[in-house]
Length: 131
Image 1 (cartoon, rainbow, N blue to C red):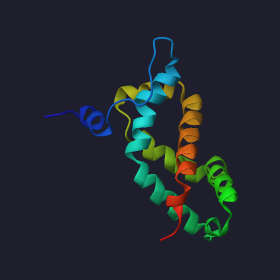
Image 2: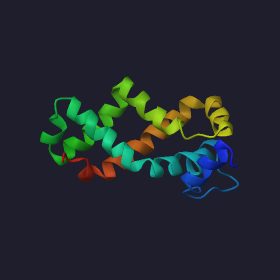
Image 3: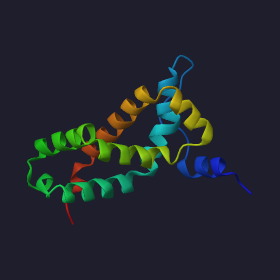
Image 4: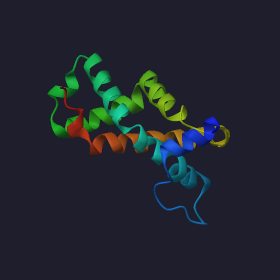
């Protein structure tokens, strides 16, 4: 029987992006852990954001395309509860060793994590329209 960590690694897939010998530990973590999780959880992030936007009086849906991009960034950077919820969705798919690595440099990795997620949502803004 597989361990939980083995199962997590299997469903997430392999690293995304190049991991070079001279890559920093943060770059390695980003490409080996964060990117695969963000890709795996993409559909969930879309639905979570749509729910967030709806609960915020739906103003997101009335904005111009440029303002929508700004809204995505501001909501993730400024709404601490929302940001922590998104972080939990990501951290929940860490293996034990990844979590131990994460807590060593959580501040820097949180910035990378949120920046990657912001860019991912901005690149898919058309999927964020209400149904």
